[in-house]
Image (cartoon, rainbow, N blue to C red):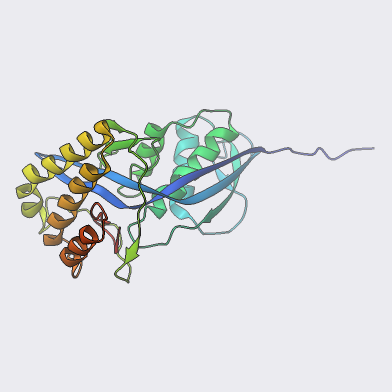
Length: 265
C-alpha cells in the first residue's frame, strides 16, 4: 500500500503602500532621485512556494499572466538567494489605481518580494527589494518605513529622511493614464530643463528634510509644491497653479503631484 505525500507549501503574505506621486523628484548634478509621498492604499501579495526539484529553476504554478513585473522580480530574487528550485503560486490584491503615478507597480513588486522573503524565513530588506524592482522599471521609495531619498533609475539608496508628521492628502486626478517615463536619459528632450532646475530642486528637497526634522508639515508641503510647479515645464497639469493657490486659500499646506502620472494631492 502506498500513501500520497502531502506537500505543505511555504507561505508568506505582505502589504506595500501606494503613493500620491512624489514629494520631490529631479536631478541634482548628475544624480537622479525622488522622495515618494506614501498614502494608505495598498497592494497585498500572497506567495506559496512548492518544491519543484533542483535544476529546474523558478516556475509558476499556473498560466496566469497577471503581474508580470512582480513575477520577474520574484524569479530574480529567488535566483539571487539561491532558492530558485521552487514552484511559485502568486496572488495580488490591490486598491491602487493603475497608470496614475500612484506607485502600483512598486507596491505589487514590493509586496510580492516581501511575501516571498517571509515564506523563506527571511526578513524583507527594502534595499534589496528596491534593487530588484528597478530591473523592470524606475521605482518608488514607498517600500521603506520612513521617507527615503532613492535613485529611482539605478536603485541606489541615497539617504533616509525620517518619519513625517501625520498629514492628510486629498488625491485628485486629471484623467487618463501615463506610463512611467525617464526624464533623465541622455536622449530625453527634457534633460536640459531637468538639469537647469537642479538648484531649485535641491532647495525643495532641503525644505522637505527640514520639515521632517522639525515636524513641520507646512514646510514639507512648501518643498513639495515647489517641485510640483517646477515639473510643469516637463509634464504639464492644467490649472495646477490655480489649484495650488486655491488649496492654500482653503487652509491646505500645499500640493504634491505624480511627476510621471496624472494625479495630484
